[in-house]
Amino acid sequence: MYYSSANVSERQAAPPSLAISTVIFALRPSESSGRPTLWLPLVRRIREPFKGLWALPGGPLSHDESLQSAAARNLQETTGLAPRYLEQLYAFGGLHRSPTQRVVSIVYWALVQPTEAALADESENVKWFRADRLGDLAFDHNAIVDYALWRLRNKLAYGSVAYHLLGEYFTLAQVREVYEAVLDRQLDPANFRRQLKSTPEIEETGEYLQGGKHRPPRLYRYTGRPGLDPDNRSTP
Image (tube, rainbow, N blue to C red; front, side, top):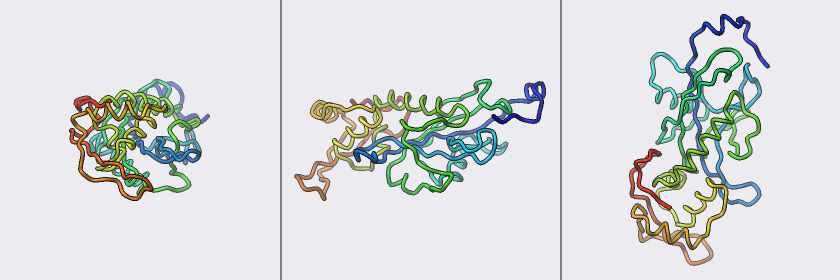
């Protein structure tokens, strides 16, 4: 464990430091089954504390930028990602989050489509990980990811969550795969389809998904308001 050269009293007297972190979820195929699973990008720390451990993208908050701008900048600099929707998740300010000083982190989160996720920078120190197979992360970032997953699962009751992880057009089966990936359990296809088709924000397009061996499934689109907030209309 790394400790600052400042003594305990000096660290206790110093004002808390403000930082920004981001949790970005995307769908990627499982390495074993090929079914969609939730993944997120992490950054390997190259300095103490927690040197060598993986952490959420982020960094300190500067004096001349807003929280939203800082979250977007940090994410762009570390991963190359620029999500269309980046919303504030929660503030984490436990007394012992960092061994060197008191740090309060404002955490943002977003959902990105596979085409967006494919544009992310990857290197020795920036990689994607399955959300359910993270191992030990730096600071309290495991707890942050767990909280983000809990919020995401609760927000499946709101309209646009699944559609941020898909393209503009999608099949009902693809929506079910999103729900199964987030909830980490299988759903009854017939029951899910019946509930989803009764949702007013799901609209048939008259188009069909091409390229398969069987009868092409119908394509739908989401017509509700975008965003992750609870003002969106409900889906199954």
